Length: 240
Image (tube, rainbow, N blue to C red; front, side):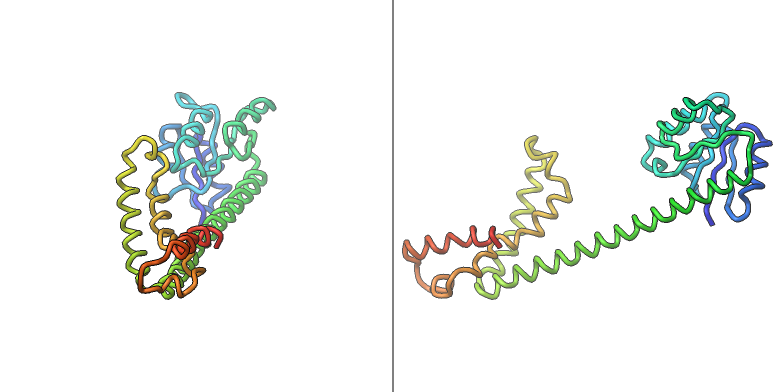
């Protein structure tokens, strides 16, 4: 059941809109702008707001400005219902963020159709956002598994790499956290970016899988030529 918040300073209009929309919708009704703003952030949260324009004190235009400025209410669809029927009034309302504009006198069939359409659109948008969040979490999990698998390849080739990779993750996190207080890096080193750095750190030696065993696993000291080849692992990792 969707919740519709009706905002109108005329009790007769509140009664008419309530009779038109209830049932099937849950109706909340207030008669002023300040009450509308409080109702918009209280439970049950409205799925749609029908907002009168001409109200004493705080009019509908000011109400929608406050709604749009608040992240908690900015995504609630708003339909203006008003006696103002000039095209410039409608344009102003739509420019402020209203999704629709219905002129009075109230025509029940039109109100019901518009409300149902916008509620269906909001429900579809909410489903899409939920699906995107789920997909994002799935992608993160796939990325984590892929990074661990790739890092494991390097670990298998070079038994000493494993602990080195884990230590490097600790170093990266410590350095990144410390650099957050530096003005040059403060804006970039967000918690998310630090997590990405730490997550990706094990891949810095992945290029070792392209180094021949006789060099990578050589027990003694590398010759100058062998050391030159060993240093190519950074380029090989980048290309991989």
